[in-house]
Image (cartoon, rainbow over all chains, first blue to last red; front, top):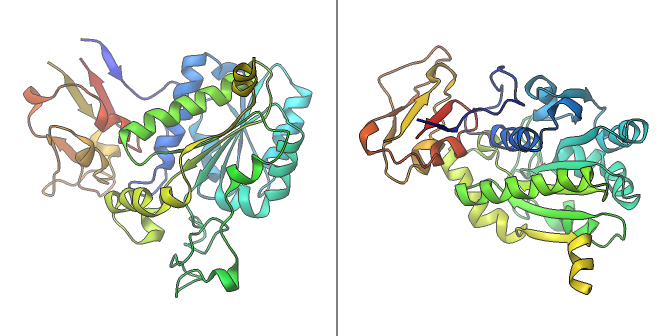
Length: 252
Length: 68
């Protein structure tokens, strides 16, 4: 019998600290599987965020560094410019990337830094206990919006892929989800492309992964994944928002 | 004939594998408790498993190994 599925070698043996049913584990595994398949574990440097994934540096077997809150793209820029032979990725949540780290994200994209960004969007601040995030949906109940997010008072959610796609800079922007097997497999393809783009020197690639937070949404893991399908994906549609190389091929 | 093995002690009993299985072969064993204090997922009928690895694809804790 041949092994058709096992834990990727680019993950350490340490058990994840995440809540039961948290898709962070799935997304970690996808990144690790891509590292295994591309054979880049030995030369990859990851940048961990602040948020639930703050201890991602313990889980990935490649070299890791911890950035201050939101500064992962800036730290990754420094690493990549000093060590262009290494593969550099950041792994960030929505509070890290879309709130405090928005400036770093936008400017790294505008400069087309040759890095890969994995952006986990679960529409809430998970680690701090479920406060409203920049990506919380209109009407979504959180700790700090107990009557639902009022867009007249709190503003509208930020659609990161759509916003960055207006820039000339970035090479590849895609939104994927991990709510079912089909979407997980599609997410892996997008993450692999984002890493390949960097290896080929094409520039800034960001993959937004629409995720879930069963604990802070107050749902079972199954119900949370259903909510991703019914409520989040209509607001954050899956798709490729920018692929400059493919656009150039089409133009030929 | 496929073989699915669970690293049961690391299972958090979230049940995502249970809902992913197309043959409905997995259940959360309510009468068991693992070292983490959760009721783990278990295979009910190994003979009927088709080795699609859907359970392992959805497992957030990478505890499932599939052989075929």
